[in-house]
Length: 249
Ligand code: SAH
Image 1 (cartoon, helix red, strand yellow):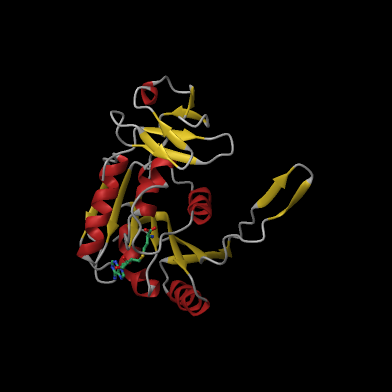
Image 2 (cartoon, helix red, strand yellow):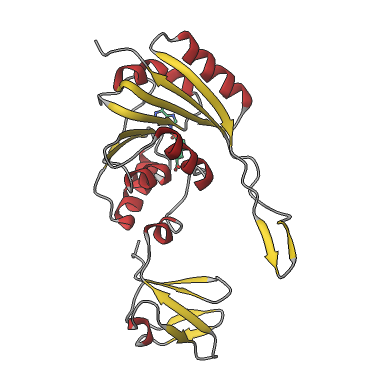
């Protein structure tokens, strides 16, 4: 996947991406000449039809929004809550399973020290690799392994499970986490939450903390017409949190 070199944005917030600065960029609002694409960040450009665009170099989030998605990826609102609740930072060693398209792994790798991601499907692993390359990340390891069976990584600070049966991973996770480390499960449905939390409560290595659902409601702001947008992001999933409390044998 060719990487994105420049972002162009109209005053109305509509974005376009230039991958090749040696070609004109065609948009629904006319085209921008290739020489103009080499302008300084923050320059105001005009298309051949006179439409205005601002140009700048992409931030991580601009690229992240363009990654390939095959498996259902976790929404940003839920990623934000996981990070805030567990305090993932540049010292953290994080494990994520299953990788899916690698969206969560890639986001976490942009702020954590190290990310390991487990995935059973080889076709998904190819997508994850291409997303890692597209984002230029160097601190993610992918393992083609079943997380329900065994985790050969140790001293993990945070494990995030986005899997059909997260309760089958509590045993393997308890061995991989550091004392005090977090286990987080993201599941779309209520029976999954019940089975995961029950498994956590039965396992003496963990204390269960809480389950939340994060609702995001975007508002429309047009002059004095200010009201919730009629269509928004609906239900995504529940987030359940626990902590590994015992020492490692
Ligand atoms: N959080 C990911 C999406 C995960 S989709 C993202 O943001 O992109 C769930 C993934 O879990 C699927 O790709 C599936 O193949 C994988 N999976 C299911 N069971 C697994 C297991 N036992 N071990 C590892 N991966 C598993």
